[in-house]
Amino acid sequence: MNIISDMLTIIRGKREGIKPTHLMYKANLSHNQMKLYLNELIKKNLIEKTISKKDNRITITKSGRDFLLQYTRMKEFEKTFGL
Image 1 (cartoon, rainbow, N blue to C red):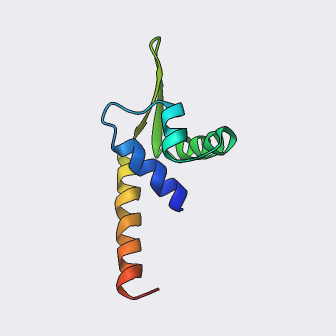
Image 2: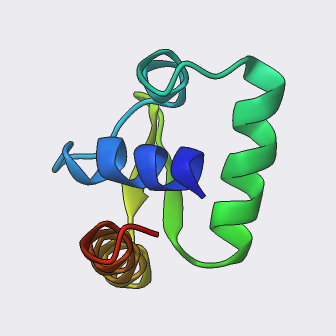
């Protein structure tokens, strides 16, 4: 969950989207790990992959932003009660 949260936070920080390679480096993932996570996040409609002639970009969806908000709230709740 922490890796997914980190990835979504990184993607959300880039308004125009992020290139997959840049995400891989910023999230400190191997290529194979990143592919697995990206496929899962796309399947769950948390991110979108845009392919153009110029480059490929990954952007966060509304569902992804909502997930990240709820996950952050859950982590804060957990800290509040020392869990």
